[in-house]
Image (cartoon, rainbow, N blue to C red; front, top):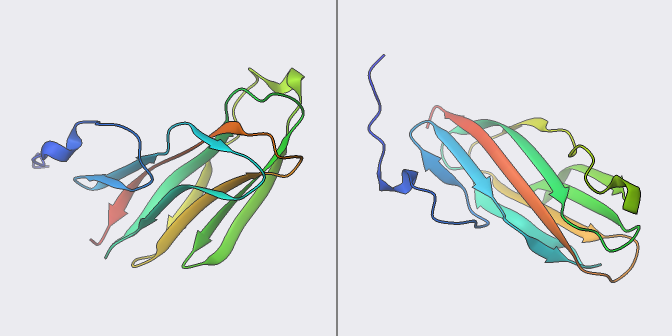
Length: 136
């Protein structure tokens, strides 16, 4: 197998809402985003010409109480997945939520959001995506 030349975009330069492509692979890391009771975009990008097979994980940082968070994934504005994580102070430091295996179709706008369902407290939330692009 021939080696793929990796461009200058291979160097990690920080978190963002967009998708970074390295050869046939891609990733997106939201970094810490404070989220209260209004849905906030953690990641938002377009998939491009190829389809993406990836793992996605959403999670939380330090939670000030027993706030429950809702996470949703939309494709072209259509909700394709959502779930709620019930938090309590005893949950802090436990295992992170499971990775979700998803396939993102070509030419698709992807949005991953979070919101506090319990109250208006603002807590840090994160989203990560790691995958491979096919037929680009």
